[in-house]
Image 1 (cartoon, one colour):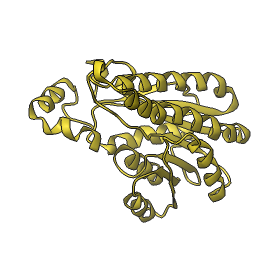
Image 2 (cartoon, one colour; image 1 turned 30 degrees about the vertical axis):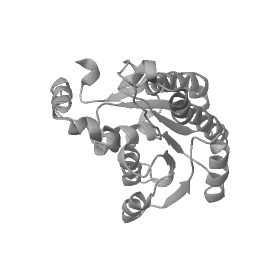
Image 3 (cartoon, rainbow, N blue to C red; image 1 turned 90 degrees about the vertical axis):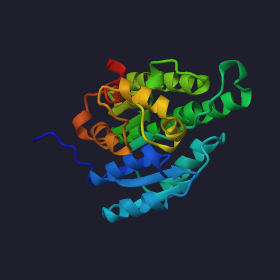
Length: 251
């Protein structure tokens, strides 16, 4: 039997699925055959339309992941819709920018709550069900700032370093139970979060010149990596942080 990248019959949760990287990955998973449960606070009609065009099902769950009980509410709503989950993509995240000496407690707490606390809790709760199934794929979204310090983003950097650590910690415990936990670390991507940087011609040119591939990434660039990590083709991949950055980290 050959290597299978097919996700036919699989059910995937994607947080932050309304636009950008989350939308791109949700569509990529659907193109490979999965039905999608999109989670977010923004309108997901565009994602729903694109996925249904592919003949796949889309379920939308409106949820604010900054709320303390969000993970528990998510699990409850998910299992009211479906009887199992095969794939979890923890994509939702926020970023706040300010000089370190002026970075507020509120901004720190908001970022950590969404980018780290929710990832831990959702992974733990959905992971329990995957362990019972004896199989599952969990894909966290890390960052180049899982490896670097960045500028004016101390909370985001801390959260993404922690996401990389959580990925490895869960993988160590769950690999033997049939649950693969890995992460994707995107490079500079064309999303709403980077609009201001891209609008700065000097900064944009500086960043682009440092990317060996010579261009910024797009949501479509994450489709192949997320399908690989969600499919049977990655069954022996555990605790890996896959950089999808046009070569940024190797420059």
